[in-house]
Image (cartoon, rainbow, N blue to C red; front, side, top):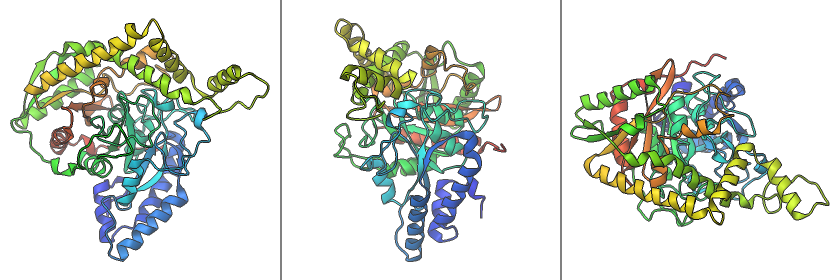
Length: 489
């Protein structure tokens, strides 16, 4: 049998169903790996030892009885710690929610458990998913398994690093402006940001309601397609959920891009792009051309407005959403008595939130305030419409839009944390998909001085099948996804 640490989710399900690998053995191996290496990586905030082992034994029992154990039978899954699991702390990487335990499961958790998936633990993240490096967590930064001196990307850095290092086979991330695709790119794994409304947000602690989506992270396109199939689809508990039938995305795992046309916007290779990343991504585009596709270099002039519009929208929604965390109804309470409500409210939030979250709340409140609403927030909404129209016109002529996921490879821990603008600029290629609600995928396409680089593929609303097909074809004809970090610390 293959090395358990190098198994894909697809192969593991096959072995468990045929009885040559027990789910309990797989889970215990992953717990051993977490104990051995997570002290250096810090991917997990909490681990569900007893619950996960009991779930694995149930899967094994059902296999022995000849029952259907589901499409994710016995697969260990990491859950980003802003997604609710009943009775398990959901901290959002913040002191504010350090002791919060949800009384219910997110819809995506119910769905994966219904197919035999096993929650191994809650993964670390930038505080309230606000960041691009997973350095702002109250529980400490996550480190990149390719180089522990580098960041893993954010905000789903714990999930990306846990998959890359083999601590789990699959993981949930959430993507508000690139928070799945960024760690996928930096950690050399695959991550999908779905169409807005394709996945239920019920049980996801809100950051920016009109932008965020839960999505899959895995080592390969194939296992991400399977994982995504299980938890996507309409949910009546989520008012933003699209009223569409559930779909089997594994049917798009077709090794064929013959006749497809791709647009490659020059703006995605603009100022700040690392020359090494640019070369690797263009090499990837040439691979797809060699497989029968054609491409055209294009200009999407509206992209230059995407980043400022995104941060106005995201911070404004964050300011509104996080107002509930006051230490009275929800969250951290300093415990001091004798102060009036305003003083207590201010102290609770000052101590409960980290610097980046406080910054975004204040900037969002400013953008929504009287006298500035039309100047900032309303203009950002108009830019959103402009971007949407521009992309719709482009995608009438092309099947997908290609470019680098991130403008540079993973940077040093501490390098940008004191320069918020530099961190915000790292999202320049990813935020557009969130602003206009289209699907996007990051797939490994090479290395820059030993650090992974991701190719981003974007398509029209509801066209997850198309990006999966393109990414799968690229993956099948290259070997980058087979590269695994050698962890010897």
